[in-house]
Length: 308
Image (cartoon, rainbow, N blue to C red):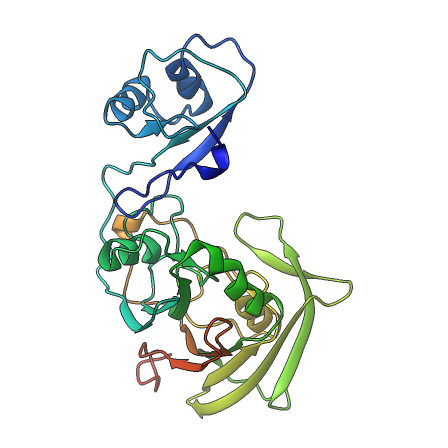
């Protein structure tokens, strides 16, 4: 059987994760899973197997008593028994045979991560639109609202992703931060961004710049400004890092300049979202040749009537 032709099904909007089976002293696959994933339990894996949620590399169910065979690939479906509901709804603002453009509220992650699975934009849309191969072309932070582009067919994802790699997509963000007279607006911020010492944080370091953002002021009220941010590059947390480096951290930022303690989803404070929105997205469709322009309907807290 040709493994390249094996299609592992999507279940409940979620694709299977996979793990390679190395050489080892395991009698059964269950023995391996218990040791390989210590956060789970043996009974939990056994239940998952009996539900058909663990598959071999041929897409066939693996049972708790299945013997361990090294140098194989194992597929399994993630489970989150008590996933907190996120009380905001995304909207689909465009769909054709090739793409979907969704408008994401604050607090919803784009793809499964950590404690989020069903409550992610990708899985919600797969279930809602019944498109198993829906895939995000780019990412927004969980805290950021706005436009996200998805492809509907697996073989076209890289074609659309190349638009971002080759800087053929114009992206415009809105952000709220303190005003500063230290800069001549508009301005362009260049820097080199790399992973910081603390988990989640990125940082600016010396060296050849690898990130560029055009920044302009749209309006200023009571020492707060509404900014237009145009990222030319797409580094992780780029806009948040650049604004913070300029002494203008985005209002509501839980990572810059200070990394706040982690809060479990069920205890999140939804009243103070990060004031950052991916407002506009424009590009020429590589499949149809159509010139696309999309604008988010998500809003920031502006004007800042209650800002202090």
